[in-house]
Image (cartoon, rainbow, N blue to C red; front, side):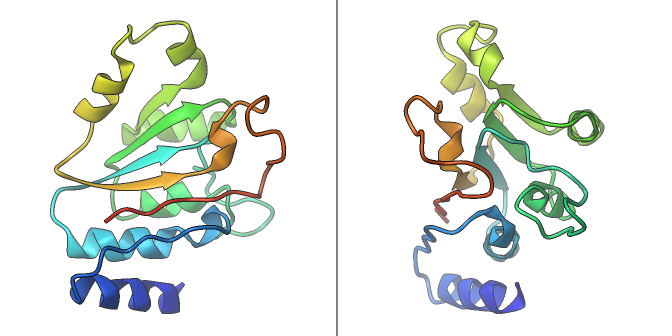
Amino acid sequence: MDLIYENVKRLIDDKKFVVTLGGEHSISTAPIQAHYDSYDNLSVLHFDAHSDLRLEYEGSKYSHASFAARVAEFTTSITQVGIRAQCKAEYDFIKEKNINTFYAFEIRNGIYGNDWQSKVVDTLKENVYITFDVDYFDPSIMPSTGTPGAERVLLG
């Protein structure tokens, strides 16, 4: 994690636009932290089927299912979109930390109206780090993915 952080931070300091692809969310905390340390007014926009807010998963606090909880240790300016699955502890964490969460069933059922994307944007600050897990897509669109397999896109 330290090596990832240092390399991403160096690239940002060199005025590079950093994009990371592939892998899974367990390593995402480091590049997010590098961006958070480099940009004022940063929000994290998290597209995923899962909240990834478990304090630990299968004995590791650095699990793919825990990366957003690690991010929440330095910022709670997190907006999650498309969440379809979470445990009770994650739901409680969202309420306690005021994490903006747009559940898939709420979007699908029109809870936010036809302009739900505007409501997502309204939760974001000036600078936005985007992280994307392909299981965000319905399994009928992306049938070959599953936990922990994921990809993410980083925009600084």
